Length: 342
Image (cartoon, rainbow, N blue to C red; front, side, top):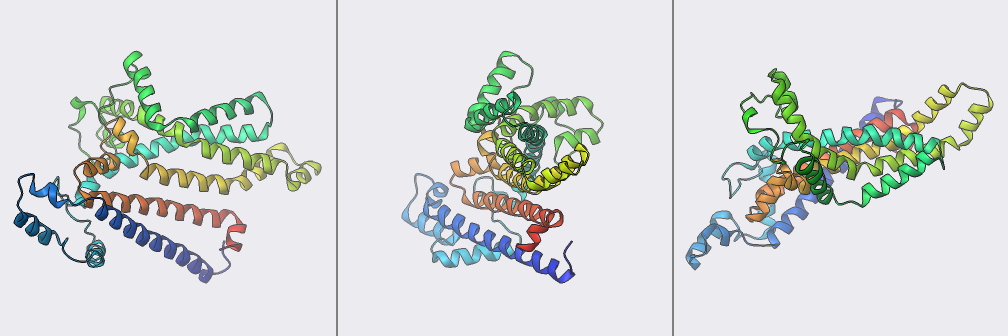
């Protein structure tokens, strides 16, 4: 723990300052990019527009004002929790994001769990058994996984597990159509179907979740595996582990010391992976028609609907930074070296 509450407060204040500054930079870049790539007015007025219609719509949307004034208005809206209105669905962006966010969270969380369940143990074993056949096999698997594009792996899994073997349902949404009448409490179908006591609906939601989650788990877990392996190798060769063995400490105690020392970087990498998953599921959501934030952003881009795009980018960046902040705090709790460099 930190020596005083003041040190903790200072530590958290610095982290929150970095988080807020990063969000401001993301909002500036996103706002500038979306306003330079095209004019949505042409889409809204249609092909048979007149110059008068263009001018009226431009004034109505506030696009005739300087860019800095448009950005200031946008930030003012954000401070009131308003992400704007979709010009395609005509819904508030916050409402659309609220309805789609649980789908992305559910997919990302299950993908992370699948990846951690195999990558961390495999990395630790491979690091503890250098140059063994198991370590070499893990090397091959990790290199093959990281080199495969997620959309290509997703299509391959669809072809094998759905089209050829018929083990899993078609990649069309989150659940079979006949089970869509259950009450939604959390927005996570796997949890809500259990709360509703509908076992068949739960099985259907899990089956729909397996393919996209497996695709993301395979393509994002190699970094965690590599960190776990490298840190385990480094620690098992370190002086304090050799000293512990020389003093005759039981192997279980030595392994516990080693595990504690490799925990911090692995947790950081897991947090970064989760942040990436929350913001990087776009291609997988498109391939599997998964109605999450990624598919929402792609649909918005196809219609030159920029408010949803900016909203999704900000929400994704916020999640990523918040998860990273949690990992930073956790590392400060378990690793004294983090506190020294705070």
